[in-house]
Length: 194
Image 1 (spheres, rainbow, N blue to C red):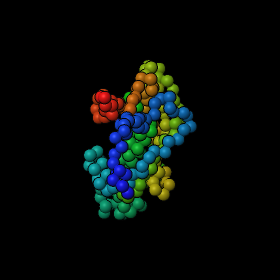
Image 2: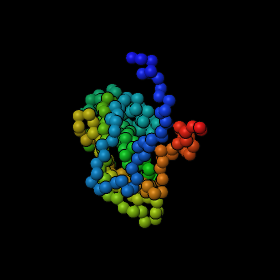
Image 3: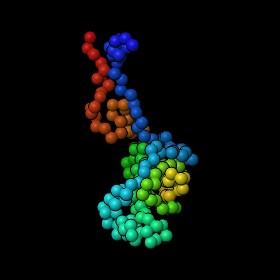
Image 4: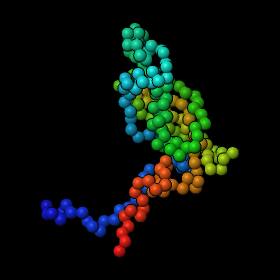
């Protein structure tokens, strides 16, 4: 290997490349299913924090001696944590560009979640429609489903956000969703004055 093999090519220009910017209203089609990236293993800490923060006093979540005597034989993860986790996992595909969440409906816990379970989530588009009161958004209803590592469905629910239309968002590589103008690398950063 020569010294030149490690040298930086001085003719290489910096380019600002668009990353994932989330789906806009126009991108959703009824029947599409999005498998959300990244499973998440639920920890005891998650459960303890959630029960304390929300003041959930059911001993099934924080009293090992009590839970050991139940049909489950161990503590259960707080169901509202499972809901919040599944919704959070879906944001990357469903609501990065949402302006509001209109509702969470038909929430069902199909099986218990335990410390150490790894949760995966997917969303299916059930319906989409134009907003009758806001031109810049449309309304999308999805069914969000969560599974454990064994493939058991642990949660299902309908989720309905108002999602921006692309023409109103006008995303760019320099200013993707959530970034203020002028922060970080800019399109002109790779230019040189000759």
